[in-house]
Image: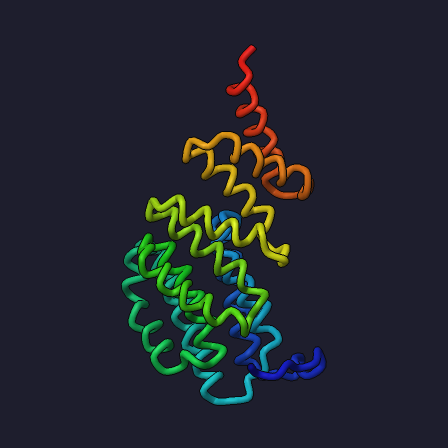
Length: 235
């Protein structure tokens, strides 16, 4: 894995690095709806990781530059023609990155971003394939593991495979990393309800309420627990 630089060294990075991170930040801000939904947050994490990577090789620079270009193009086309057409338009660009730089940090992070783009385009099978490969690379980026697991869960849900979605959300809730746990509990409550398992749904919501009182979804979780309770114990 590439070496980390100090804050002072990062401040001396060339404009290419600053342009890259600023472009990614713009993408996140412009896609705040997806980020609130869970998947788009992967792009935010890419910013965090890329912010400390040491671009010591030309190949690494090219990989990140190509990813930046592909993401910018997807962003523009998605707004103009929708995510499905935008995904088709940038498909070859991401394929090229993965073919040339799959063992580079830029290539590994591009795979995650590509999975997110495939999800947005409802190409769930492709998103699952990309996330599963990314999960095998997660040892290089342990902080990204829960985001990849969430990507898999959302993609399986998109395919209608709720059991698999539950399995991946539960991998988040049972892990030691606290990132995205609150969201995972909320989604377990939501999906269990859809599966006709009100007791498990209520248990997931109650855990969220008890352990994550400041979570974004707390009020909605309380509302759904109350609704479940009223159904089970009619007055």
